[in-house]
Length: 142
Image (cartoon, rainbow, N blue to C red; front, top):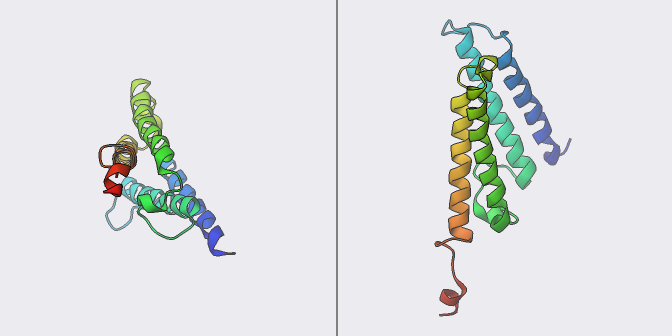
C-alpha cells in the first residue's frame, strides 16, 4: 500500500472509533467511567478522520491547512464557510427536534467547535485572498 492510500486506514480507524461512541462497549478504564472512555475513543476517532481528510485533500502529511497548499483558495473558502454553517444548523436542528437523546452528550459541543474552527478558517482565507488583507496589484507595482 502506497503513501497515498494510508489515509484510508486512518479513516477506517476513525469511523470505528466514532461508531463505538454510540454503542456502550468501552471499558471503564483507569478513571472508572465508561462514558469518559467512550468520549476519549471518540475524540481519537475525530482526530483520525481529520488526519485522513487532510492527507486525502492535500496529498501530504500535516495538520494545518495553510493557504499556500490550497488549490483554489479564492473559491474554496466558501465551501469551508458552508461546512461551518452546516455544523451550526445540525446542532440547532438536533436540539430543536429533541434528537439529542440519540447522540452522545457532548456531540453538540464538539460539532460546534468544529463549525467554529471552520468559520474562523474560512474567514481568515477570505480576508487574505479576497478581502481587505489581500495584496492589491497596485501595491505590487510600486
